[in-house]
Length: 92
Image (cartoon, rainbow, N blue to C red; front, side):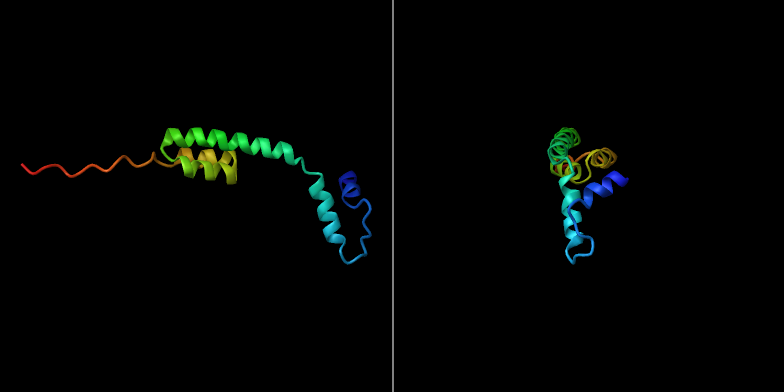
């Protein structure tokens, strides 16, 4: 934890008025953005397949994009997409 705090506060005067933003930007620079992008793309692709299987493509993609693998569980717990509407039966 000390190493993380040292990296976050490197080159920052903690008494300065804008110190929070400098620390915040240092923390954002430590995030592996490329890996997060590719993982999220994988989650959305699997969500697309699950949505196609369940008949809820757009909903599955959105849940997967926002929640990742938890979005898959949301889609799997919902009922399948609605069947096409059929007209009522003819009277006899």
